[in-house]
Length: 123
Image (cartoon, rainbow, N blue to C red; front, top):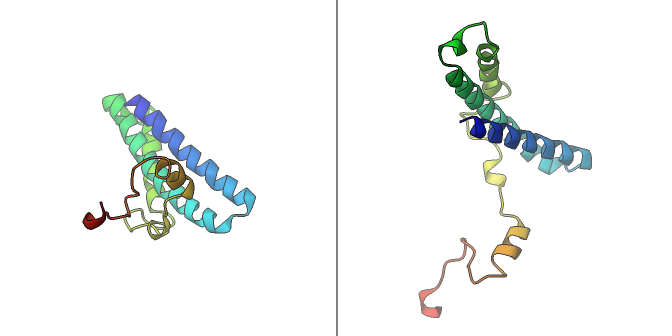
């Protein structure tokens, strides 16, 4: 559980760094997409990680003696600010497979891209 918590935190951090990189490069269209993804993923992971941390602490996780209780209370509003994560994010229609992936995975192998339907008469 602790390893999963670390992986989730680092994945959210990497997404935020990529968002900052796009902003520094002036790639505004990509920045819009990355900012939406970073907010959604980061706030969900913050809530998941703090919930797991409370679980690790057991009954002490709910007491005010440990900072875990406060972190959990602080993580929940992040899911709601700037629009709730329950509403489908605005980036789902913008996701496209990268050309680098198609070039390396499909053109160098015998696999067909998942969007190509094989014609049984020509197989």
